[in-house]
Image (cartoon, rainbow, N blue to C red; front, side, top):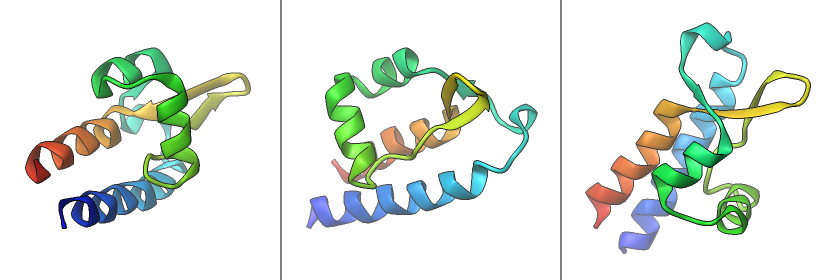
Length: 85
């Protein structure tokens, strides 16, 4: 039951992240992967596996070679996990 709730929450966050990808960088604070991993407390392979499965949002690309995530999306994942657990 908890897992279903968390999965639905993460999928909703992922949908919002895709909508947010078209925002300008100035509209939201972007963070790089090391900070994302630190906030979530998980490894890089775990993060990418969950991103690939659609549980975590995909990055936005503020420049050609820079991947980043909206801080608000990552904090929403953390809050969802707190609420569920």
